[in-house]
Amino acid sequence: MFLKTSFTTLIVGVFVVYVLHTCWVMYGIVYTKPCDKPKGETCIIPFLAGNPKLQLSIFTALRPNAEGGHTLIHKEEDFDVNTKFERIVNVSLPKKTRNNGTLYALIFVHQAGFTPWQDPQHVHLVAPLTTYMVPKQPEISLISGEDKTQGQKEDAQQKKRRADVGDGPTSMSDHPVSHWRSRLTLNIVGDHFLFDRESLPSDVHRYLRIIRNGKKMVYLPLLFVDELSNRVKDLVEINSTSMELPLTITYDSISLGRLRFWIHMQDAVYSLQQFGFTEKDADEIKGIFVDTNLYFLALTFFVAAFHLLFDFLAFKNDISFWKQKKSMVGMSSKAVLWRCFSTIVIFLYLFDEQTSLLVLIPAGIGSIIEVWKVKKAFKIQVFWKGGRPTFLFGKLDESERRTEEYDTLAMKYLSYLLYPLCIGGAVYALIFLRYKSWYSWLINSLVNGVYAFGFLFMLPQLFVNYKLKSVAHLPWKAFMYKAFNTFIDDVFAFIITMPTSHRLACFRDDVVFLIYLYQRWLYPVDKTRVNEYGVSYDEKPKGKSHKD
Image (cartoon, rainbow, N blue to C red; front, side):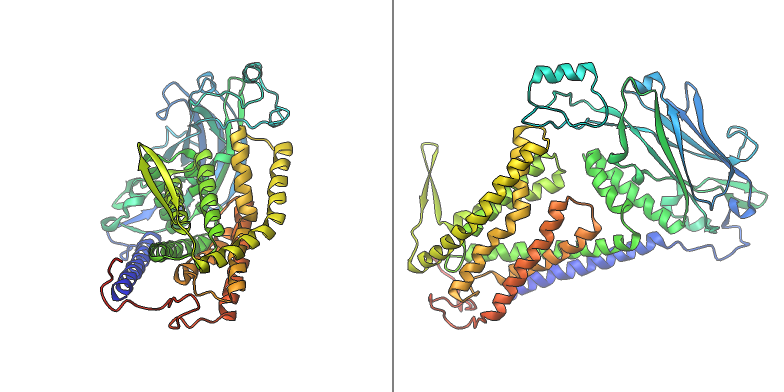
């Protein structure tokens, strides 16, 4: 017991150190120490302090260095750094861009009355207006074969491919296709901040352009292109007929602390993409930052940290409980079997949706653990003979048979409600919704059943508890950690963008957990007392354990 307690304490200690270290790092990012000697030579003063007349000019070019020419698409002649605006411009696409090529935006902030190339004190950045991504496979009605209408007619080649395939999904190439980024978000630091030359933040340094004005050092406006605002939902596929596409240009001033935070988050997303994250994976992370208020973002971090801690502790205690489990007295084997089935279905669904490996691998490990639990619950032994597995199921004793009777009775009552709902939902989806294939419909129907009605499979355990008037057989340590995580998921349901079915799944678990807690209060347990099955659930081994 001492070793277990010390290990848990060690994990909690590491968690506290991690949280404190992260808070310190975040403070170092948001807070920048200003130069405390305004007239000293080490201070770098802002160019904007002189209130210069500025102009914003945006050009497009086929290459980042503007080789092959450039085209002016927008300019703000009376550009005020502290005035927010949004403009929508139509951009003509060159032939090379329409033929699966690229296009870049050249953003200049320079003195009014001059062209960018005539002003030696201009600042500029280059932002890609296109990105490559594999087109989403079209969804069709599996009964009628009709394509999902999007308000546009298909071209002749797409119709021909669909006719060749028949009632299946459109045969499309897996090659990436150029997509148009319909949003361009710009920021300039509006604070007249004094930098200390001897302690310049490394993250801001690459955006800092310094000039000399006599003996003084002046830094030009800090221009920043917000790449996190480019979401997958805003991408438009470019084809040979796309002569013009709209571009929404958004500008707003930004504080230095927020700029530094945004730079770090943008670099983090870029690093993940270098490690193999797809555009879709990166987009989900972007949504956390773009669609969430900074205060909610800070709350999200703490919530996620505690979620990770409780996940680990629940996993540790759950494995320990099932490893020592010798009897299924008081435990619903049907509920264990259902959890195994649901985790495998969710894993297959995530695999079908091409989810990130960081999500897919833990889901796969969870499925393997649930299969192991089924093996323990049903006392399955596997023997290999001639390369073929042979399964041997263990026998139940009298107490376990009594529990199994209650479990079977609960499932009988539950089936009257569950099966019609699941079958009706699958038929409705088949008629009115569209999917990529029959397999996609099957997996989506099963996942929707898991999300919508999965909590019903927790009810047999409640029924067994009611019949036995006992809850001592449950793994309460692991259960309580999971209960904490369920309520944490409720917070995530408000903060993070997620499917409606998954959001509802977070709240419906709360009801079942509250009933579990009510049963624990209703059936108090003296764990030091040997129960009717001859088991003491709080009994500690006094000596070294030995095998029978």
